[in-house]
Length: 158
Length: 452
Ligand code: SF4
Image (cartoon, rainbow over all chains, first blue to last red):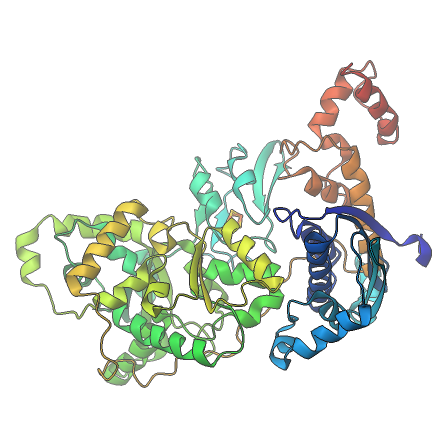
């Protein structure tokens, strides 16, 4: 059972573009699961910002998308695949945010409302690929600090 | 007051009185209640790490089995000198012709050595808040005056603790000030002076039980709390003999503008700032906190949050209904004048430090397992079990939802056969009742066929 490979929790969500009423429901679900697992709150905070920003981007621009959310003992991964207009110039989209996000905003952990740079800032791994008029794929990875894992202690209690 | 658990809750579940009718199970916004079988009976129990002391369960319990922990008069005999500080809500419990000074005088009649009003202090506090909003980089700030709100943030939104205003409540300001003054004047030690809050809700008891660092002295200056509902009959008896007592009415300076603090939205209206909002009700608060967490409400300066729907006037230990109370408070505010007092005016609290730095610590809910590997495995298992359940959240298993039932099964607290909705269908299948749990899955197949 302690095979690292088998220790994956996985959940799929569907997100509809333009559905502002339900906006953020995937992030809420993701956060609930992370809390139950006992992931440190700073990490949950970063995950929920990434997740929410990405979800909002989809709701605002894309038609539909899936979120593939998985957890292993080391890492939390969010994979967003959307069908939508795509991003013309990814580099520019990333840059724009950098120039608008003030230090104050960063201090608070929020971006400039420009999702992508904010996601990049809050994640440990960030990959994006996009094709115009087709869609965007986003990979977000956030590491779980193993120092917070009370492995030895738990053996005794369990 | 019994100091029960290490979380210092202000609510106690009496399993002797509980009839297990499950009224509380569904209303608890923190999903902190379970109905468990004890010996032969089913009784409600509270999970201490989850409860936020909102009092919703107290309201719905018909068998008086959920008891708010407060003091009674007997508890105060240990003090040499007792001081009462009533919540503004107390003023609204009486007819309009009975004014706050008379109520304060009557409190002395029933045995308190001294009585203080908080309307003056609430102005000092409001000014501090106004100043703080201007200098603060954190937006929105959250008011920390409702202990349930603080508790909710500590347990579920620890990332937002930095948003709490680092300012003490008017109550603490008065308590700290008068304790110091009295001890100087009478030579009594701090422990000999009992500062008693006359409270509209039990959650203020947390201040005392937890000895939370709510003030700059590192702990609360309040030594006890007695419900308005307990004081009310005593005062009523005296009110009914008006001649003797109104005559002896002492002088108390009540500030109309400061009285605003007592109602929901009062603080925001004092601030005269359109970027402040007032929110009440635990579920609404959760909605707003979720928003703040995602970076919404960045343009809001302050969110004044109260767990009870009508703020402190709607506390569970008041006598008068909250709507009447609010109209009475409004008429009191008009009576005393709702003009903002000029800044230069000297008051009792001018030179007091009202700042309170870094005081609230996270109290996260216990995770499903402290080992992250086990936790992941357990959550996966939980989802798997959940898929097998009817997902109707009937509550008959004693859990507020099927998802939580699945969690309890994973934890070994409950067994799959505790689900009556599953059981019900199983009974109608020909198999005998006592079946080893292994065969459940197969039997579920037969269940699905029945509706045809
Ligand atoms: S006081 Fe509130 S949070 Fe605590 S058990 Fe009762 S309903 Fe739940």
